Structure formats: C-alpha cells, structure tokens
Image (spheres, rainbow, N blue to C red):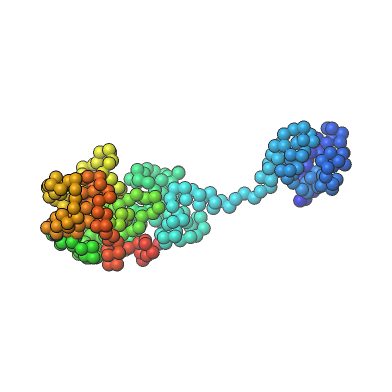
Length: 374
C-alpha cells in the first residue's frame, strides 16, 4: 500500500479513524490500550497499510459507541474503489448466456468456445442476422422477429435444424411422390426396426429429415420449415423415445409439408402428446393432428375397439387388433392411453425407436455431431 492512500477517491478507513481519534483527543497508544491490541496493529490501520477486519470493525464500534457496520462499510467502499474493473467480456458473455444456453451450445459443437467478441459474431452467424443486437430474444434486439413467441432454447434448436438441413443434399421435392410414399411409410409401422428406412424414403421425395437432440428445458417435438419454396425440412427431437410418438410426430410434420405450412414462418410443434391443453389450436395444427391420428390408427377403428373392450383391455386383444391393422401394438396402446387417460396401461409395448432410426439418418446429438461448418 503506498503512502498516498489519503488522496484516493475513496479514502482508506484509517483516514476516518484518525479523524475520530483527533476529535476525542485520543492517541494511537490510547486506542491500542482500549482495544487490547498491540500499538503496531493500530498504526498499520491508520497508515493505510492494513484493512479493518470484521472482528476489528466490531471492536472499533464498541470503542467509539457506534455500529460496527460504519467501519465495515468504510472498508468495503475502499476495497471496491481499489478493485479492478471486470473484463468487458464478462458482461457480453452474461448477456448471451442470459438469453440462450450458450454453454450447452458450445458443448454440443454448435459454437466454438472463443472470446466474447468472436462468440457474439458466431451467434449472429448462427441466427442469420447482421449482428448480435438482432438475435431473437436478446435484451436489446433491434427488431421483432417471427421467433419472439417461442422460448430461446426452441429457437436455437430450430436454427440448428435449418443449419444442418442446408448441408444435407436430397432429390427434388415432389408432393406427388410424398403422397405416394405414405402407404410405404405406414407399412413400416409393424416393426420398430423398419423405421430405419424412413430417412431414405423421405429423401427420395425431396424432404430433408433431420434429428437434433433437444436442448435442456426445450419442450419441442418437431418442426416444419422450408429452405425455399421447393425445399421442405422436417426436424424431430425424439423427446419421447416411443414408437407411438415417433410415428405420430413424423406424420404430423409430413402433413404440414403436404399443406405447405411453414413456408413463411417455421411451424414449431411442442407437446403434441398434450391432450389436456385448453388453448385453441390453429387450423393447420388441427389438420396435422387429424392426419397423424388417422395414419396411425383410423379413428373409427380405435373408437370401436375402445367401446367394445373398455374398461378392460386384455393384452391379447390389443395384440390381435394391432395384427389386423398391421401395426405395432405400441401404437394401439399409445392411442388408448391418450383417449382413456390410463397412462399405466401395457407400457411395455411403448418400445424405444431411437436406436433403430438414427443409424441411417442425419443426426446431431446423443453423442454425435452433424458435420456442418460453424
């Protein structure tokens, strides 16, 4: 500590302590005697070479009959005035992290771990804007975007799907080919392993199917977006790794593509399994839900089956019903659960699908990183 401590903007507490001694007519030796401490300890504080500890603040408060906080606050103010200002990058990183799960995005390989300025530039590139002030959901976003109604983690996931899709070549999109592919797709529903053919069939129709693991706290099932008027993209998170959910979400997104939904603004689908929502659905979601349900099990068939068998659903009846429809029993169980709210019914048939569909697909997540430029 230099000898100019009295000249700093915020004086050392020793300056005020010395004034108090002069006011009372006490010497340093008197104060040392009152405190029961060596005179040298008092001298170091008065000279600005030692700070006031919490214990000393209490002792001085008692000695001068004031609250100990007076001395503690003097020391705190002096320490803060001497502390270095933080690196400006701290605030810039905090701004990014407060809006988006940046650390997770770096961990997943979506961004590189660089200094704050380059990180802001990466984020702007990732979200396809001119600078970081235009990133959706940023505190000082320069303009409103089509994504302001979606949580940031969902928006980041959507842009990752779009980023990967741009690097994924497929044939020319044909609506006719996609409609003709629907029976082929439905024929795969009898066995979980057959789902491995889905990405290839959609690619032949000109539809990019991208699987991206969701970010933490992002309740997202799928998305339909278009790179241009002739390039539809389906993104899926496989948030619920079940055969019934996989086929329902897939057919739901296919219907969006067939209807050309999402050409002006991506259609982000969240909680497609939620049958308790009181929020009215937009027409395109009603249509996509109806198409997905009919594709999995015709409404007339499942309604008659439930009417005949409810409230007792024997496993042999469900297996027999699924064989007649040539689908996996898990799709029947899933529909019955949704319609009857009996979520514990024969859950063993809700088999996992991810391990079958990912090996032949474009994947980002679950320990894999899509090979796209940052």
